[in-house]
Length: 378
Image 1 (tube, rainbow, N blue to C red):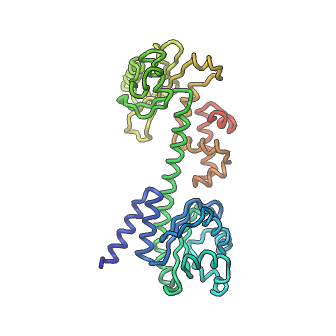
Image 2: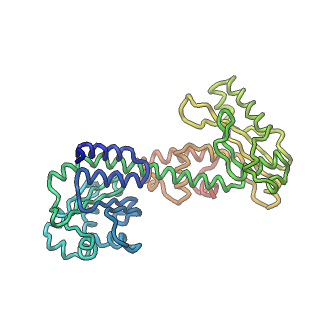
Image 3: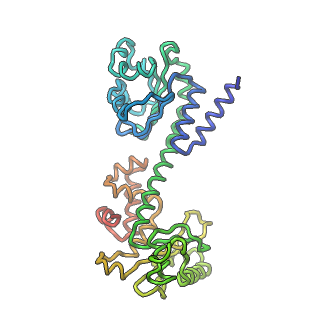
């Protein structure tokens, strides 16, 4: 028999190491079975209001539930009223809410769900973000196993802080990856070419239009129709030359030089006819010891005019991509139509902080209001 203490320690380590949603679920299930063995463990994440969760995990699996199984389950849950009336409560034992067990057995919830899932007693842990339900996990026991004891409650109280931190960490990482993907998709499909280079002029990021225009620059105006632009991609020599010049100036002038050179883009003088290119030094990381990188934008003026597109401000595009990660995150949420209060609640920030960061973004983009920001993001 393995040492139970070792199993418990391994379960906590797995919880601390969880970075993905599936890893989080696996760790919580393992942790609960190590400390509070139960007939069933269920994890609910991404709640809409107090009820419906967008992601549900349960072990053992429920045999072939229909796609709306957990939606109906949430709607009929007799404990919803308790949760709504006890915002911030860390847990509840089912028998403390419905003290008459016969009453619980007579509910539709018990008849349709608890009975078919094979349990009679339950204990739920709640994770809150302000007054918003952040996540919930429930433990269920059979009649034979008996109800959860006060000792079980004490164990849950000790585990809840670790679980709350893990849920918050995975939620933030998930959100950041989602927003990063949205930004990358947004940049990838822009009619303006975007490159991000590090100090050594190694490519960090490029969108499709930048790769296409670089091929046309190096190999002629029809190169993108003859070659796979990704396979023949090289930085145009004039772009390299301009970056090297900027790099020499930064070395000579130091930190102040980065600030001055970063205020306005430097145009590449020898761009092909019908194409414009600008370069701007940026700090890729906030740490002072990090070398700056170079943000490069390309635009095909001929194609823009031929297609009768409204002129796109390279400066605005450049500034948009120079927003800090926090400002970019806010910009996306503004684009979704969220108010400052809704953004503050979602990001666990104060409304004042949201206003300050949005004002900073407005200043960088040379705009004055939310409507202009939404228009710029379209």
